[in-house]
Length: 315
Image 1 (cartoon, rainbow, N blue to C red):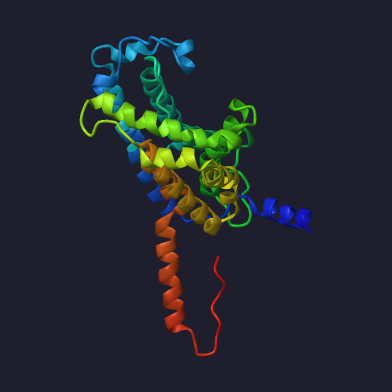
Image 2 (cartoon, rainbow, N blue to C red):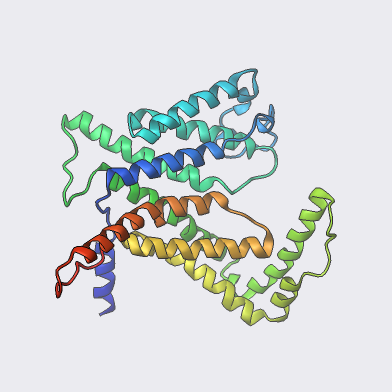
């Protein structure tokens, strides 16, 4: 029985039909998010003290040369506008991906690593692979890819973007278990100490009141380890099962809402924010415009349905 249900679930995890206007809205919003991840001119450093990622192989400090980053930023704005329109994706997406990764890598090569924008880069990578795959297929075969079941290139574009997003959470679980030698759940109540550390970091980073003192949330976590393990364990399980979002629109929206709640709780406890993660969850998993249109159509059908007739089931 369980095996049959698992097979049914796996069979349901595939690209679904998606409307052109949904993709237009998604691309437009995502283009704005990508632009927001670009650091300011003052954060384009002329050194890479601790090379991170591709900076270990490429000297990215050329971005700090006079006029280079401003010109790149203008080119990116143009490329993002073209991306939002949906034209020339095999050309503009690789440029956007490489440029965004370069500037963020230089930022992360100063002795600290900011983890808040990796999801954006991974989503760009997934989209680039998808559009290039179809472009190469057309070039080699001399004809478009034969889509079936009402699917389009946009269906795969969205599906693999969603896959990139949820993979972040699954990998996070694997990382927790691996780095703790399987002891994460048993030692999770010690996160209370990190709550104290986060509060003191905020103070010493700005030297503004209130001064760090007693932290009720941290005290509660350390005093009630089993309750803390249960609460934090639920969050880890949510991360692990984030892949359920790939089953369909309803599952994607519910998982995304739960993950946003998860991020909000972390922000409240530790002032650690993942705004870009939340934005991508809203854009690609919740997809509010679809549900607004779906609800409007359902209400319209209900108003015009003959008495005694049943309405179509929820998609």
